[in-house]
Image (cartoon, rainbow, N blue to C red):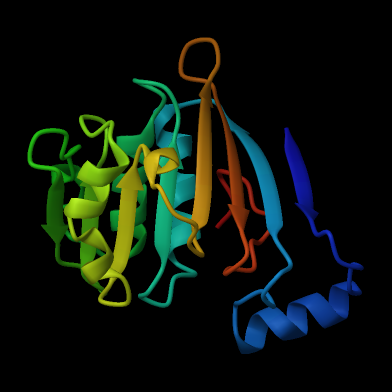
Length: 182
């Protein structure tokens, strides 16, 4: 099931939206965009993330949330693939190392906050030093103890490999795409 992007501000015409997207690919600040998509398999989840990442300009922060096994690392792999990482299958959750760095079209700084429960521990990481140096992916992104402009991805498990993925952003124009579209 696909829900079209919504905005709290007045919606522009289709022509105005496509014109703005073609110029910048960014939303105007203060106009959050939401998209909810249901994927039926791990492959569709990966493909969705790959397509989203193709819109990135190299300074995005991606906050991933969802229970254990929801597909956050699969989504991170898809982002790496979308950013042109050759060996994207090597992307793994940095649960114990806290951060992995990958080379792609833009550097990817992949964090996992699962083992960090205290805000002070998260702040002590210094991960904010990586902002604006590449694409920052944060698994367990809901634990970030401060507000920042980011693409927020909430993944909910369904039956089997089915996932409901909600993407919210005030920094990207989210296209209404679905898995299987080119």
